[in-house]
Image 1 (tube, rainbow, N blue to C red):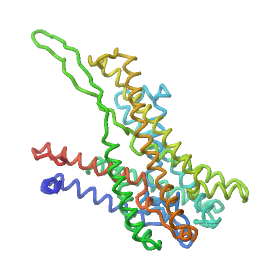
Image 2 (image 1 turned 45 degrees about the horizontal axis):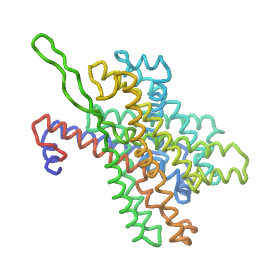
Image 3 (image 1 turned 90 degrees about the vertical axis):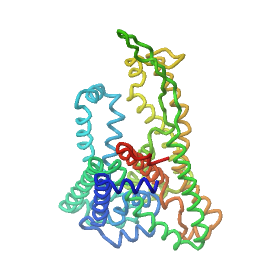
Image 4 (image 1 turned 135 degrees about the vertical axis):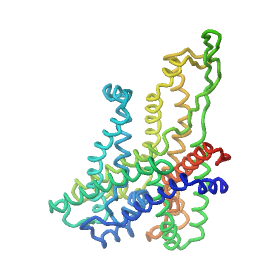
Length: 438
C-alpha cells in the first residue's frame, strides 16, 4: 500500500487530484469555524459541557461545525436526506420512475434533489436551534431567534447557503479530486473532531486507562466488523444462453451477481437518527412538566433502554425497507432477461425477481442486525459505565468511548478509506502499475 501511495504521488495528474481534494477539505474546515451571526458563545459552551447524546453525534459528523454553530452547521445531511427521499419515492410515483429512465433523467433527478435540499436545510436549521435551546434548559443559543424577524431570516438563509456550499465543495471533489465528494466531506469532519473527543474522554474520566483500552477495543472490533460486513457478498450464479450468428457463436458464458450483505451503507442510521429526533423537537410544543422533561431526557439526550430499543428497531427496519427499494430500482431480473441471462433452476422474469428479493432479504438480516448493534453501541458502553463506575457516571463526568467516532462515523471512515483506495488503484492500473490494494 505504501508503494502504491508513492506511485500515485509520482504521477502529476493523480498528485494534483489528491492535492485538490486536500485543498477542498481545508476550505471546509475553515468554514466550520465561521459562526452564524448572533450565536451566544456562553450558551454553546454550556451545551457542549453538559450535553452529549444527540448533540455529540451531530457535532462529530459535522466536523465540529455544530460546536461553533458555524455557517455549515447543517453539514450535507439535508442534501443526503433529500436524495434518500427521492430514491424512495421513485418506484412509488410513476412519473418519477419514467423520468429516471429517460435520457438525461439522472441530471434532472439531481436538480430536483438540490431543490428539495433547500427546504430540508431550512427545517434542520430551525429544528437544531429549538432542540438545543430546550436541551440547554431554555437558554437560547441565538437570543432573539423567532422574535427578531430580521435575525431569524438572516440565520436561516446563512445556514441554508452553508449547506449548499458544503454540497458544492463535495461535488468539486467528485469531479476533480479523488473519491466521493460528500463522503470525503463527512469523513474529514469525523477525523478532525476525533482527537479532541478522545482527549476529552481521557481527561474527563477518573479511569483514563480503562477508557483508552475500551476505545481501542471498540475501534478494532468496529473496523474488522465493518470490513467483513461491508465487503461480504452473496454470489448468485448466472448463465447466458448461446447465440449463433453466421459462423460466430455468442454468449454461453457463466458469471454471477454479487449481492452485498449491507448494500445500503449507513443510510438507515442517518434516516433513523433523523426520525428519532422528532419527539425531542415536538416536546418543545408542550408546557414544561414531567412529560416534556421525560421526552427531552430520553430522545434529546439519548438515554434509557426505551430510546436504544427504539433506535435499534428503526435502524433494523429501515435497512430492510431501503434494501428492497435499492434492489427494485436495479431491475436485475429484467436486465438479465433482456441480455439472454438466467439463473440456473429459476425461470426468467417474475420468478427471477422473486428469487433475488428472497435472497436479498435473507442476507440483509445480517446487515440489518450489524447496523442495529453499531447504532446501540454507545448505549451498551453507557450501561458498562453505570455498572463499573456508578459514582462517576452520576456526577456526569463519565465519557463514552463509543462516541469518539460513533457507530455511523466508524462505517463512514472505513467505507471512505476503502472506496478511495479502490479509486486510486483504478487510476494506477490504467497506467500499468501493480495493484494498489492486495
